[in-house]
Amino acid sequence: MAIVETRDIRKQFGEVRAVDGVSIATRDGEFLVLLGPSGCGKTTLLRMIAGLEQPTSGDVLIGGSVVTDLAPRERKTAMVFQSYALYPHMTVFNNIAFPLKAQGFPGGDIGRKVEWAASMFGIEKLLDRKPRQLSGGERQRVALARAMVRDPSVFLLDEPLSNLDAKLRNSARDELQQFQRQVGTTTIYVTHDQVEAMGLGDRIAVMERGVVRQLGTPQEVYDDPADTFVAGFLGSPPMNLVDGREEVVGFRPEKLLPKTIFRTQEGLIPLRFQVSRVENLGADRLLYGTLGEPFSGAKAIANLPYTLPVRIRPGEVHEFALREKDLRIFDRATGNRIPRNPEVERK
Ligand code: ATP
Image (cartoon, rainbow, N blue to C red; front, side):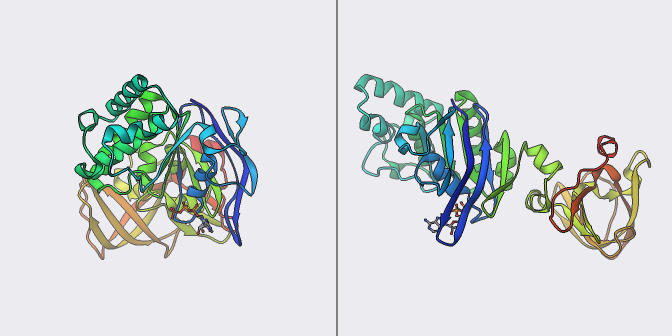
């Protein structure tokens, strides 16, 4: 177990600033997710932590020591990529044992360690098979077991579940989380999938164009995004952002609701909502429409739980409302969130 830290780390590929000054620190045993759109620098950051990429400037620390100039092997990190290459001619046992053999571990220890790692991922019955006799999910687990067998102090995962189909990915996510909690190894996990990030991470670092926009718990980055980028990246559909003259006002679709369902009128902003389209998603209903005063003419999306007994059809105008404390205000020029009167936010 160890704390991983980067200090103002940068990586420039020619003209491209892939990572542009990132300073983050995990907590011991934490599951930290690096989340961001394609090309934002997640993989490059992870590879610098692993030692597979030399930073242009800045440092990586593991367990309090600077490891910037150490080879990957000396950092005691284990990395699993999206395309986990198993050795096709070797059995599962030998695949998992490979890193131990390469390090000259004694034979008896190898057997015990392989069995331990295999049991962690529920693949102990597959040890005699070859990779081609395994499903995609099983192969993925073998790759994870192989990474884990060396007792790394840090586990680095780059979209390790993205080759699995949606259903399998859900269960693999669950297993991975349980496993990580059990072994308590500090884990950094790269993904562009916000649902995965929200479900897996103790904390999420949201990245854009080489910088970390916000580092916080899933709840923090969702409820209190640091800027309009984070507000728009998390949530499906994302936060509504309405342009004002100097400010941008943000509110989550699930906060825009029919006025009648609010228990108290205190702190409520009533507004008319002209609904143009209704999308039934099973558990939720998405309403697309246009707001009246005080957001005249702004387009917005409301997300109503299916259990809410109101009939709403396209073309209708309804009385909706927002609670003042659910508004998030951003500076229009910088996109940064403007903290407001704490009284309003606490209510
Ligand atoms: P994805 O989710 O698509 O994998 P990412 O967030 O992991 O994206 P990176 O792979 O870190 O992004 O890439 C960040 C930027 O650096 C991109 O613009 C990419 O084209 C560039 N880049 C990455 N590796 C190299 C390289 N070896 N040489 C040149 N440019 C690179």
